[in-house]
Length: 424
Ligand code: CTP
Image (cartoon, rainbow, N blue to C red; front, side, top):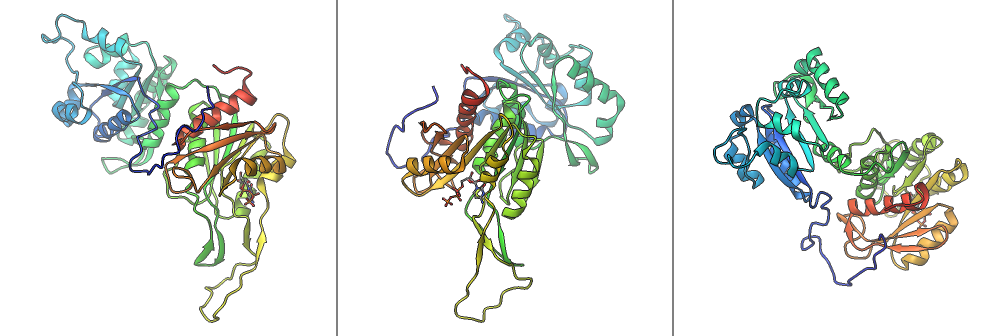
């Protein structure tokens, strides 16, 4: 069931809201910590994984325990830390088999060159490597090390072998590593890690699809220091992009200037003005299967931006604005066969009628509307409450949810209507 009626008219504030986004609820993630310096960040990530609803089973190697004490690990994860393959305490059970059976997902974070070499050749000489052999679900390695160690042919061959064996090896980031050298070897950012985890547990229903998402506001310059813009935070568009990538799509994000962290998608194109957004979106549109116009594109821009700062001379200042190109309407004009085009609209009342009118006028396949005057919806909040209007006039009303969950629901609707004939 997707459609749920709005259940309550109670007023919500962001502070008293429960954490709605728990996509790992009822999943157990076995997190294997090996002895890399990125271990500290990995511990922080494991707390974030817990906040996504997952249960955690921490397993540490002997070297990891030299960098972070198992007591600290237990305190930070709130869980018993497992280290010993042969333990008198657990002598009545077979810990490596029990651990392997109780997890849905297995992460090795950070994954040292040593541990990957062991795993690639099937060595099982400690608890973590033995549980790995007994585990039958998805496994993700997060290599993190000095750039020379990372590019060493032996490490490369271990990673190649792990991939051949069906494991996922998540590429590390480029940048300054703990040893002070620059290169590839940094543990990826949390959005990229989160995305890889969600992808591992999400059916790849959009695999093979090329999807463009536009997001954020545009800025229309008045002079070199001032611009006209709007309050879009980019959150809804970024959530749409991240959710599509999690479902296996090849995602291009065209984004106006925002201050939130970029999602882990293949291609990010940063623009500023409505004209630049039009160029970026229309220039890529022909090759896309789905285009989602989440961006709050400025409808008007100054006829001419001044080259120098406008001085405070007159009591009144008149600025002449001209309409910008309607990108969504142009996308519909150029629509290629089977292309799905989705619009978003922010309204201030009469939501259903205005959204229905907009989908009719613009000719999109779906229009997602929200009323920015409603509590828990709109620009500066983490949540949204939207209606999804189809071209035939049918309306689905979603309750207030985290924007990331709204995005998941919208993709579910898109898949059901346009991509697959039946969705469970
Ligand atoms: N849009 C667009 N190009 C523009 C303005 C809007 O592609 N120049 C897209 C938005 O990205 C969104 C949809 O059109 O997907 C609806 O935006 P909205 O601003 O609500 O529509 P407008 O036609 O500008 O109507 P309004 O008069 O309500 O602003």
